[in-house]
Image 1 (cartoon, rainbow, N blue to C red):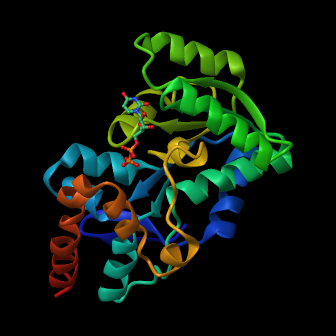
Image 2: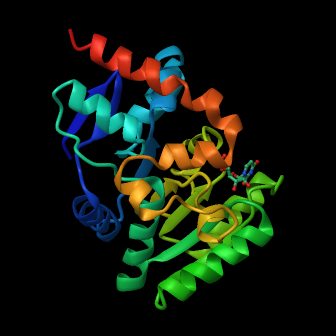
Image 3: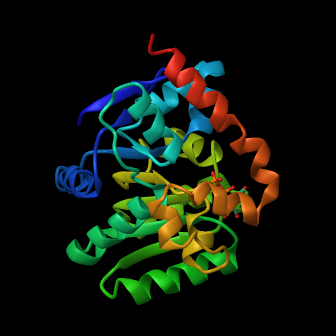
Length: 238
Ligand code: UDP
């Protein structure tokens, strides 16, 4: 898959149908694949953290989750024109399960939220195969691995926030029997209805960040980096 490098971090030039087809092929070929969501905050952190940079670049698919990544690509004359968000990619994996019977393991979030998210996914995708669940506060690491292996899952969705979820995936993806892994952040909270997602018009205008900021003003510390990120992205072009 074609990739662009933005401030040292690779990002796929793709859309949902293309990445869905690529992952279906991975599943059919029993190939391991790891999807990681890329946003300006992660790219800025990776500039200072070589290990994080390697982790992101070693993933199979780096999706342009943050609108800032799309802007950066445009500023640099790149080809990324729209977001491929973490939550919509998670839904795409749910569709693959619904359509082809792949088994999904949901790992992360608080137990009550996790169970609500599972119910909602079953409501939305009647043929989805949820092979098992484990909340994100299980202390016994081996219990998590055993539960996933016993479930015979094909896909593992890991919802524990970054970089916790990415670290877990890298540490476990080669020993756990499942093939496809995605770090989905707070997506179980959103799918369960615990945290609302921005209205469609805000998503379309690239204002999802503003919606999240208005809901959780403490995020300003994280989002203020967007400005310096865009300057750096533009500057580093020359
Ligand atoms: N979480 C978890 N285990 C932990 C810490 C966090 O399962 O030890 C879950 C938490 O319950 C929430 C999600 O991780 O569901 C955090 O999502 P957040 O929105 O912070 O992630 P982001 O998308 O911003 O990376």
